[in-house]
Length: 93
Image (cartoon, rainbow, N blue to C red; front, side):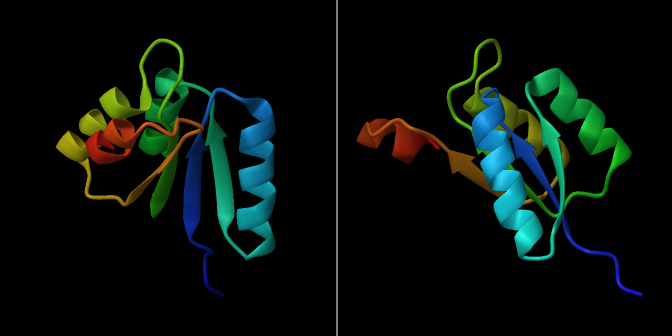
């Protein structure tokens, strides 16, 4: 029996988390969610995660800050999710 790949969805918007969760789950992934950096850290400590989707603009700790923290500790792929359309945000991400 194979264990499905785990994806961590980090976004403060419950609707976005729900949509991403359903889409990934339909493709056979195990999905866990976090609404902020604090929950993200707990989920990462408790789970072997193969991919993280990370909202760029969240209240408190933003996605870029969290991405830097993740990079300092783990080599897990990160997909930045954002509603921003400023080119500098894409470059920085």
